[in-house]
Amino acid sequence: MTYTGEPYDFNDKRAGYEQLAGQLEGLLAGESDPIANAANTAALIFDVLPEVSWAGFYFMRAGELVVGPFQGKPACVRIAVGRGVCGTAAARRTTIIVPDVDAFPGHIACDSTSRSEVVVPLIAADRVVGVLDLDSARRARFDETDARGLERLAALFLQASPMV
Image (tube, rainbow, N blue to C red):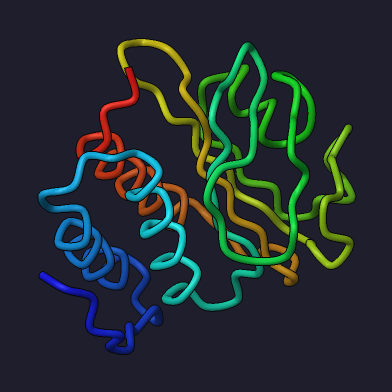
């Protein structure tokens, strides 16, 4: 399946994420390069999800997160595990939803317009290999439905892109 650029209806988020997952599976089919797949995954998410100002990946390199393919404004390049939302999600090995980044202790403000964030850890062979990070300029943009949908997209990315 090729990317069609068709509109997605996120009034029903679950259905929207189902449609998005099917589109992502098609984009990743037959390609195993993690950088190519991360680039297409970030581009698709950024293009399709409403009110997203940044979508991309950080990959674990020598014990810290290093920015990978993304869509949006320039980003922080390196994030220590345990610092900020990305580093905390990596340390805890769990998805983190932040409705108000100003209320998150130690938030790293790569983009001053970011108001909410969701970060999904990428776990392969029982180790954190990176994170999928999304920001929005709207407070409380992300909820549990977004988290579950993004976890599915992250799993599809990992399935197509061996990271270990």
